[in-house]
Length: 383
Image (cartoon, rainbow, N blue to C red; front, side):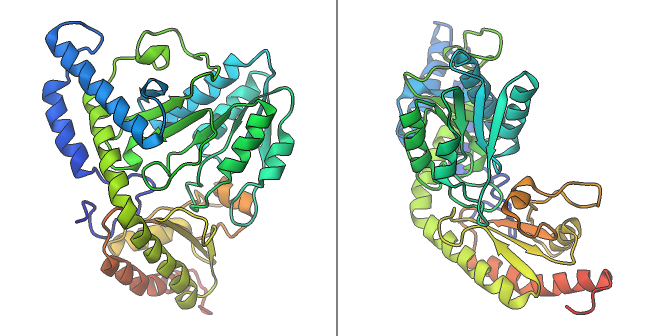
C-alpha cells in the first residue's frame, strides 16, 4: 500500500518516508543516541547500530562495509567525492571531465574547481540526454584527475553509459565518480567506478542522510579540516538513528522495487504514450526505453511551467518542473538546454512506490483541459 499522499508525483525530488525507515528510526532514537566513538555500554550499542547500517548499505551496493561512509546529504557526498578526488590527484593534473547534464551539486563543485585554477571539460549529450561514451573517453587526458558521470539523469530519467565510461576511465587510469542518487534502490548501478554518491530520502529514508562510497585503492584526500569521524572521511557527529533508518529503508525499498519497478515503468509508458495523443504541441523527452522506471518528462508549448504546476496542484497533483524558467529573466533547465528540446511548460512526473494506476488515470484525464485553459488564458486559441 502506498505511503504517499494521493496525487503525489514528485518522488524524484523525495520519496515519502518508508514504513521501515519510520519504525527503525523510532527504535534507534532510544537505542542509538550515544556517541558511537566511546567505549561504555550505550555507546557500544550505538556503534553496533551504525556498523549494521553500514553493512546493509554495502550489501545493496555490492561493496565492502569499510568503503561506505554516511554524510549529511547527497550533496555533501558529491562535494566530498569530487573535491576530495581532485585534491588527492593534484600531482596527476588539474583536469576534470563531467557531463553537461550532471546534477547541480556536481556542476557547482566543477565551477569551484575552475575558480581555483582547475580546468573542466563538459561533455554534451544527445536528444535523449545521454552522453556519448566515445566522446567521454576521448576527453580523458594524461592530466585528467577525475571524471564524473551520473548513473541516470534526474530530470528526464535517461540511463547513462556508466559501464562503458568506467571501462574507458580504467584504461586511462582516471577515477570515475558516479552520482547515483536517482538510481540506488530502483535499478542496479553498473560497476567499475571509484566513488559513488547517493541520498537516502530518494529511496524513502529520512532526509539529511547521504552515502559516500570510496573504493579501496582510490586516492582521496579530504578537502575539509581533519576530523576523526567516519574514517576521517566525513566530519561531524554521526546521526546514528537516521543512518539506521536509511539502511532499513534501502533494503526494504530495493526488495519492493523488484516487483513494483516494472509496474511503475508500465505506468510511465502509459503517460509517455497518452500525453502526446491528448495534448497538442507537446514533446515527451528522455529515452523511452533505457530509462529509470518512475520518471517521465514532457514540455508543453505556449504554457508557463510555473502556471501549469500551480494548476495541477489545484487539481490535486504534486509534480515538478525540470525548468526554472518562470520568467524571461530566469534561465531554463541546463539539462533540457543541453538536450536541445523544448524547455517551456516543462513537467516532470516521478511516481512513488505503490502509486495506484487510478491516480495516473485521473492525471491523464485532467491534464488536457488544464493545458487548454492556460493556453486560452495566454491568448492561444488554436489549442
